Length: 137
Image 1 (cartoon, rainbow, N blue to C red):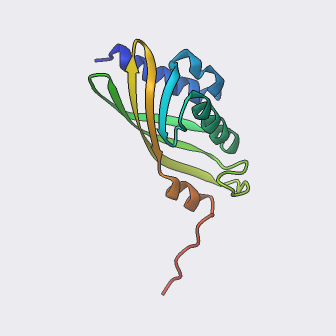
Image 2: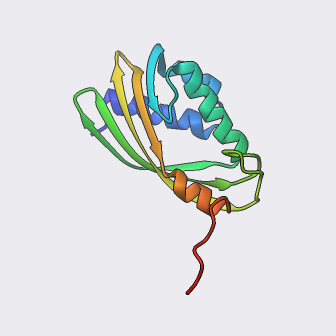
């Protein structure tokens, strides 16, 4: 069953997928609190999202699971895109990446008020050639 909170979260990812992080005001509270990869507030969340979209302008996402408990929505998703600009200090490689992410969002009164974001940075860095490979024995 789709709850109002899950609908807000789905809209959040539609906005990210559209490449318009400036529109996150539509679903995020102005005093949003962010943790981990989300930055500390709405301004930083928009900035982090914009940076990701610059590095991977063809980024697509696939929502795998949305699980709700009270006002918390746990989201498991995958992203895919092409590394076309600097990311984490690594120049564009032109390589395709696919990586998993997990977000936890608190939704109150139709807005995301708190978000914690984790993505598989190790996989991204490995796929864009930023990590040394192990020597073969």
